Image 1 (cartoon, rainbow, N blue to C red):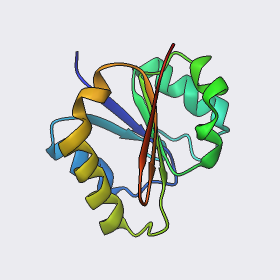
Image 2: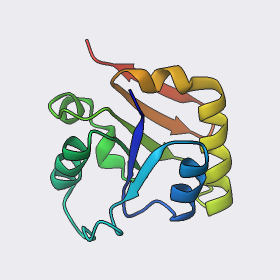
Image 3: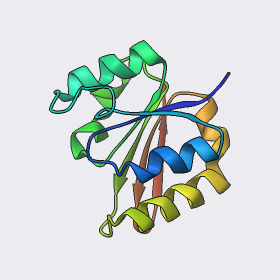
Length: 121
């Protein structure tokens, strides 16, 4: 199974290149012509392309909404320093230590001091 990512419009374009270089198929909402869509539509697009959603939108932290959608998973960046370089560094650290979590459906919230990982029960 290949791991695919769908980046929400609030994620930097540089993350597309970063993840692609790491071997992941990655799309950005903006390059798909979906700028300004509601969160429910982001879920639907991710379902269509069988991808993980990567976002900074706190609404995606809602576990009950998450489990009702057939997406690979959701990664929510809930960090203070949202510069592109820091987002790339944080994603790199996450991938170095947690790649196995991408093999099954999870809601992952990356915070400054912790990573919260919720599985489907």
